Image 1 (tube, rainbow, N blue to C red):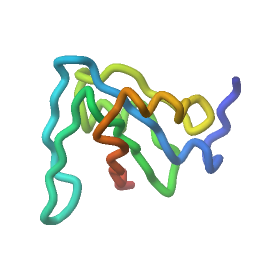
Image 2 (image 1 turned 45 degrees about the vertical axis):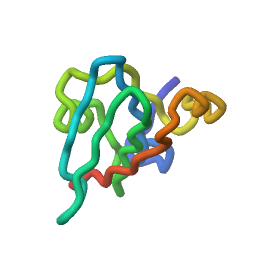
Image 3 (image 1 turned 180 degrees about the horizontal axis):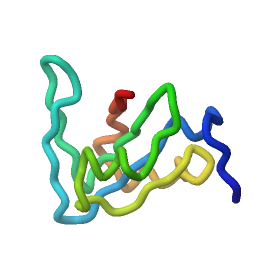
Image 4 (image 1 turned 180 degrees about the vertical axis):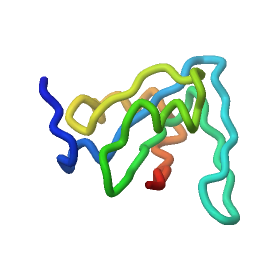
Length: 90
């Protein structure tokens, strides 16, 4: 698959975490979210979201990343905490 920068589908990435990966990060002025094996982080931006953005937020402690087309919403049965949206700056 060829990815062209700037396409709408590139402006969102779904990120899952391993069994022992737990992150607590600031997601807004007064909010902090915990990301773990029971949720899916949805990174959104006005621009293309890249793997660099994922590494900046979570280091190397995450499991898989998916584009909007690749993510299978039927798999959400395995993530009881659901989606957590993260707005990527830049």
